[in-house]
Image 1 (spheres, helix red, strand yellow):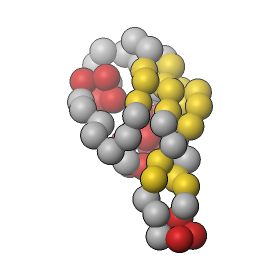
Image 2 (tube, helix red, strand yellow):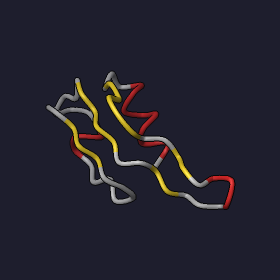
Image 3 (tube, helix red, strand yellow):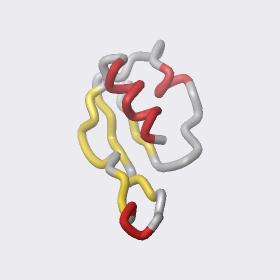
Image 4 (spheres, one colour):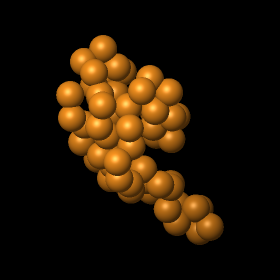
Length: 59
C-alpha cells in the first residue's frame, strides 16, 4: 500500500489527507484512509484497484 501512495505522489497526485501507516510499533500494517487531489485518468491510482485500504481521489 505504501508503494501505491509513493507512486501516486511521484506521478503528480497530491496526498491531501491520511496515508500514514499506523500501529507499526505493535506489528500492525494498517494505513489510514486517504484523499488524493490532482489525479489524472492516466495515473495508476485512478485506473487501478487499491484493495488494501480506502482511497478517494478527485479526477
